[in-house]
Length: 151
Ligand SMILES: Cc1cc2nc3c(=O)[nH]c(=O)nc-3n(C[C@H](O)[C@H](O)[C@H](O)COP(=O)(O)O)c2cc1C
Image (tube, rainbow, N blue to C red):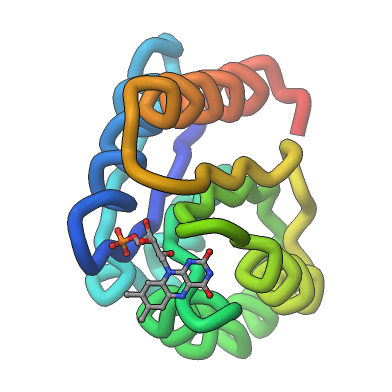
């Protein structure tokens, strides 16, 4: 069965709620196994089992939040050694920007090399229903693409 791995980190709970919404959206697609893991619980074996990766994170100080950076640092060489090439998508929670986290994530992920499966989604400001809806849509669209073999 194809599988989507959602890896997230959240300090205040905002990104966690977005990740859960994406997880719910992905669950709407039949035939896709969806895993939701905190970044500090996720590693190379989880990537090796996955057919796609959705990263959910905040922008902190103009960059990726540290725990997602740590996940990427830990898995970079092991993923290359295994020849893993996955489609990925980014869901970024930000106060008023998010582009620094996007740029940094895209740059790092291009080195794996992982391939973008969707436009990055940046959600700015306080959590609201529209943010949760956008997260659900991204999760469902990514899972649908995996299910149809588009990526
Ligand atoms: C230490 C810190 C640094 C932040 N830096 C940025 C930033 O550079 N750009 C931005 O748009 N938002 C920034 N924010 C706001 C967060 O990205 C935003 O509140 C996000 O929703 C936090 O999600 P989380 O609490 O689930 O991790 C920062 C927040 C914190 C706590």
